[in-house]
Image (tube, rainbow, N blue to C red; front, side):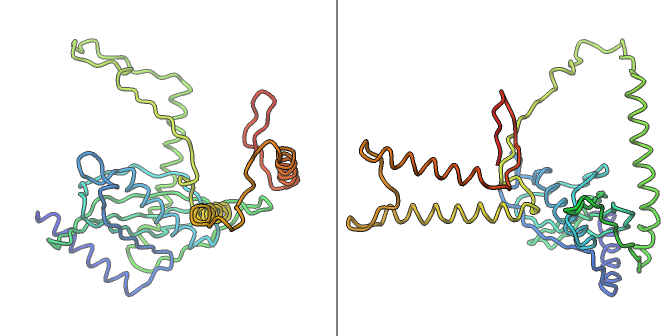
Length: 290
């Protein structure tokens, strides 16, 4: 291990001892062991998976302070100092640096640990902005201010306001450049080995499924879990039932076609009578809801 890495680890150990004496109620710690399913083709932790863990820890920290559901508004640039391999442990620490009116900045520290060599090193440090969701009546949730205790927390608290100002200025600069149609001239001395930008484009289309949802759809996911459990029990009953037991459903044949059709129409009427439907899409004057 290099001396630079050792110095960083000693500083981090000192910070941890100081913060243990002054408990921060918004701090969240998460540890994950890297499994093969988390890795890419090089047996290294996928950056997408790491970002998912970081976002989950930061969101929990934000919601712990806000006391209400929060969503990710933005995340600053992240520079990864080291890669993480399969079998190593990822340690993530997140805490709220400063709360503004309805948004807050969450600092995220990612370290890696090798269980067999007892090595520790820093992977990255990131800052994310979270906002509170509106209440059921449409009102915004005003956040309580953060009171920094340790010297490091005071520094992060002070710098958080400046980082917020830089983010806003950066957005204004980008919007101004795009509105003025500012274009940089291509260097004419580029040789034949240059690659057209069109050849580097990759498009991806993903269908958003229930497993992709976050924890804020708790009621819907609970109902899905209940439905899956019922399906498993029904399947087990169908396979294991004896000849003399009542079948789970009425088998179709021409003699009971009217009976089954009546049951289907009745079930559709009951679904249509529910008031909790939301319009999902509308195509060719046909509405689909869920």
